[in-house]
Structures are given as C-alpha cells and as structure tokens.
Length: 628
Ligand code: ADP
Image (cartoon, rainbow, N blue to C red; front, side, top):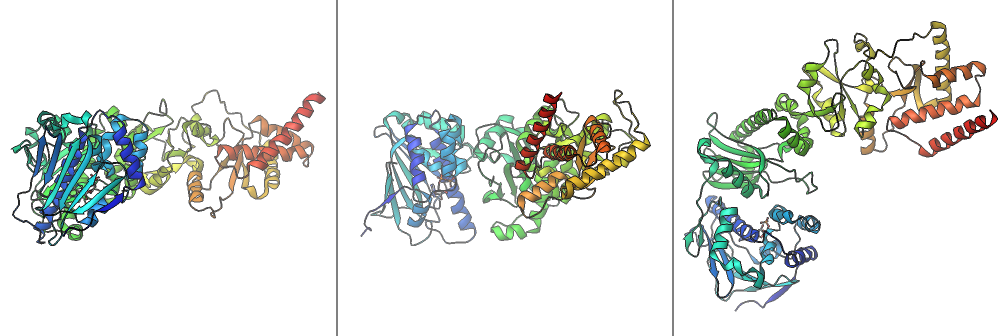
C-alpha cells in the first residue's frame, strides 16, 4: 500500500518568490519551458554519467530523451525525461522546503522590477519555480535511478503548500512534470508556441527533444565543429543557452588543440559581471565533456579563479570517461589543458584589447576580478599587459591607460613607474605629494581600488621599471627630470634662512610630538604648505590603511611631515617663531597644519581633536580681525 499523503510548507523565501512569480505578468513567460527542459537535460546528463561510471541504474535500456506532450483540450503541458529522477528526500531538499542560496538574491532582483531579470532565474538555482508563471497546478512524478526507490508524486498549486505521495504503480526511471495551465497561459498548450520556445532557448540541448512524438531540436556540439562553418549568431545563441544570460557575449574564443593533448574549447566572456551586480561569487565554471559526456557541469579545474567571469566548454576525447572529480584534478592531462586554455584565452584578450572601446567595457565589468590574477606567476607577463589604470594624463576618470602606454610615453630620465592611491580622482589630485609630479609633468597612475596596492606590489616591476607610490618616491630619482612649470620660477631660499627654517621644523616637531616621525624641509612641495611622507621601502599610505582595516590592532606608523619654506603659511610661522619661540599661536598653527595634511592623506585619527583645534584658530583669527 502507498504511504499516507504527506503535506509540506514551502520555505518562507520560496513562498515569497512564488508569490512574485504568480502575481506579476512577465513578458517572457516561455522561459519556464527553458528551465524545465534544462533541468531534464541535467537529469539525463547525471543518469548517463552514473551509468558510465559503472553504477547500477534502473531501466538502463531506456533511451536518454526529453518528451513534451501537449493537451489543448485539457490545457496541460507535460515534460518527461528519462534522467536520474529524485528520491523522496531529494524532492524535499530540491523543491520547496529548503531555500537554495540564490532564492533571496533573486527575490531581491525581481523586486527591483527589472523585467529582464526574470530571465536570469536559472542562474540563481531556482529555475523550477518559473513553472508557476504559467501553471496553476503542477504535478511531478519521479522515479529515481537508484534501484529500490519507490515512485513519488509531488503536487502543488504554488500557494504555500505541496504534497508528496507514493505512486500506486511504479513508473520508469525519470521525471514527468505535468503543468495545468492558467487560463491566461493557454498558449503553452500550443505546439507552435512550444516549438518556438525550444528553438529560441533549447536548441543546444544534447538529447533529443520530442514534441508530441516528433524530434524538434538538432543536436549539435558546436565546439566540435570547425570555426569556418559557424556563424556569429550560433555562438551567441549557444552562449545564452550555456551561461543562462540574456545578453550577447562581449567576446569569445573557439579553438582546438592537438598537442600535447587533443581537445576542443569554446570560452565566452559575458557582457555583464554578475558578481559585480552583487549576485555573489560566480561559480559557473566550465562544462567539461569527455567523449560527448558531460562529466562536470561546473568544472573549476580549467580556469583559474581570476577568470571566473568566463564560461564555456572544454571537451577532450583523450581523458578517461570514468574520470571522477578527484582524479580529474590529479590528471596530468588536465594540467596541460588548463595551461593551454589560459594561455590562449589571455592572448585572445590581448587581441581583443586593440578595440579600445570594447575593451574598456570589458575592463569595467571584469577588470576587478582579472586583477586578482596578479600572483599567477606563470601567466604574469600576459596578464599585466591586460591591466588598465586611470592616470594623471587621462582626460577624465573614465579614460584608461595600459602599462605599455605609460612606459612608452615616459621620459627617458624617468626610472620608475609612479602610482598613487586614493578614494577618488579628486582626492588623489589634491594630495600634496602630487605637487612635484605635476610640475615635472610625470605621469602618475591613479588607483581607486584597494586591490591595486597588492597588484602593483605583487607584480613588482614592469619592463624592468619598479612601481613606486608617489608618497614614497625617492627624490634623487627625479632630480634629472626638469621642471615644466615655467611660472614656478625657482626662488632660492637663502642658506641663512634655511637654518631658520630648520629650527622652525624642529620646533614644530616638538609641538607635534609623537604624531610625526620627524619634520623636515621639503623639496617636493610646490603649491602646498606641507605633506606627510611614508618611509621609503615601507608600506604606502594606502596599504597601511588596508592593513589597518583588516587588523585594527596594527597601529598606523607616524610619518614624516615635510614643510614648504616657500609657502606663505610657513614663512609666516617663521616670523612668529623668530619673535617668540613660545608663542601659543605657533602651537595652534602647527597642529592645524598637521591635521589638514593628515586629512588630505585620508587619515585623520581624531576628528574631535581636529574640530577643536580649528575652532580655537577661528576664535583667534576673528579676534585679531576685530582688533584691527
Ligand atoms: P537548478 O536546476 O538551477 O538547480 P531548479 O529550481 O531548476 O534549480 O531545480 C532544483 C533542483 O531540482 C535541481 O537542482 C535538481 O536537483 C532537481 N530537479 C529539477 N528538475 C529535475 C528533473 N527533471 N529530474 C531530476 N531532478 C530535477
């Protein structure tokens, strides 16, 4: 006798999702066909893989195929597959009671009312529920491939609950999904509509799809075909099918290799980076085929992490079919495949970068992740050519420069590659440490992304030139580069004055105490009165801030404050100092000066103290004004 009917509640987030899907009228409701067909194909892949591994499966003589049967009179569409099926436990875990990690993310996306986004449902691992966009009741009959399991029937109207019962008579292996269509979704019982949906979304499914008995898809593994026989549209369609994304790919690479191992590969770069859109880490990976059998739908063995935005297929007939995930990683051929794919792909990106506009679009989407590859020493040389930065020579914050361009246009006298980090272009441009670089017209790479610090210190040098943070530049390296700024005629400070300034510097150091490591006269300042300088060879300012973020215990080490003897503020301070070394105003000025440069450095330790110091000074100056 069949087990008693058991009732279950949909998990809260699943309910939320179902509510949105059933109550909003989406333009692309036919995507539910795609999702169900895609699930059926996955189930068939799993069944095939299981039997190839030599595991026992039910009804091993069944053809691997998908059937779609339409009943216009009763307004139903039934999708059946001879795939792996589900046990009761799998039914419960996969459909309904346990929220998949993507559920709430997808709900969030949908509530933003971007119609296109319903298209992405498959990417969130909740594709099945799209069936309720068209169905008012759904009945799943499933027979697991595992011998000894009964057949189960799952029924729901998508409103809060579902039931699971044991079937009276066992079915053949696989899953059958019967959808009772809503009145406003009758068209999905029409063979024209379904045929169209299959052509649009499921043409690349590698199992026969039979619509009312007639096969409607042409099975083609386009990665095995010669490039010359393929049109761009075929690639585009295949990408959309494979990556479950609505947009065309931004670029793709199709090649086959013969030595040292024969394989075919087709790799795509999507237009949008889903990770960047807050979708969580991209875990799609590569579809790995061996002799036409999908052995891993999300292989992480082919592309390194920093290329995880790409998706595609790799197929080799030289790998053993019964290869399991573990041995796939250990297989020496896999290492060779990986190496060839990465090399070819990076070279492809290099070619692609010649189209600057398209590459900018690529970089803005995927550059952030590509940069994570900085410590892949094997491919470093190719990777660094792909990196881009905004720079002081850029017209605006969008313009990008490659390291090649930077080095090609730097003056012969320049020895290092300079960069400076900051929260924005404005913040960097206003950093006093930029003074000398501006007046000598030395290009500085701008970095707005904390990872750049790791990237640049990680790659150490480019074209034999070291990366040096502007706030740590060795001025000796800059002496030979002439000052371009003709207005800034060098007014030499007289040597006896220099002595006075030195004394002033010492006095300021006394006042500031431990806040600074030292106070010195500056040779790098032109327009600004003072600047904070990190010690050469130590961490750059930005890097220290990052370390501090990671570990609050790491103290930001005090810096050297350089003062500019040509600046009015410093000159005035000298006059006050000469009159009375103990003048309290000197104290306030020194502290304000320090605070203002610390602020520009992006690093104010005590904003309360700073506000108080400013206010004291305001009081003082306003008093003076009234006296006059
Ligand atoms: P996804 O397919 O992205 O994992 P779905 O919501 O479409 O998300 O499906 C959830 C799970 O239900 C699948 O991962 C699979 O385990 C199971 N499933 C769905 N359809 C079938 C089917 N036809 N045969 C076997 N298992 C299925």
